[in-house]
Amino acid sequence: MWRENKGFSTIETMSALSLWLFVLLTVVPLWDKLMADEKMAESREIGYQMMNESISKYVMSGEGAASKTITKNNHIYAMKWEEEGEYQNVCIKAAAYKEKSFCLSILQTEWLHAS
Image 1 (cartoon, rainbow, N blue to C red):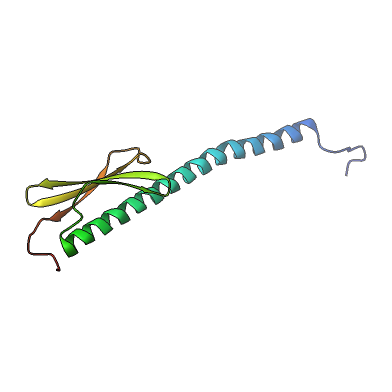
Image 2 (cartoon, helix red, strand yellow; image 1 turned 90 degrees about the vertical axis):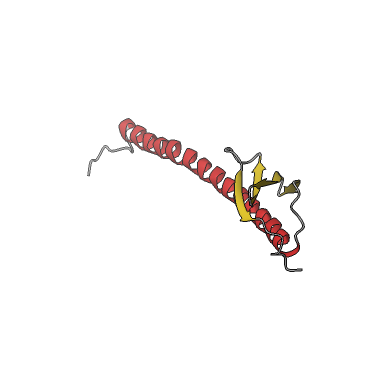
């Protein structure tokens, strides 16, 4: 060992700080993007659940094929039913979605209803 060693040198300290700075500047933006993607996925899942409930109600009773606006978990969803030939399209749009709305299609029938 060196007898006159009094601690870390300036170069060692600067290299350690630069490594920590690199790690922080790399990990923090990735973490923020991961959290934003998680919120987007949760919002889309809620949208799919609401579309599924609306389609189930339509298939079981023949009702519920009206366009409406729903507020859930501080997000506003706009659900729109459209006829396209022999299909019913159910589209949902929310401000949380950065891209356009997403849709599901079902075959429109008069005899399918359970009641």
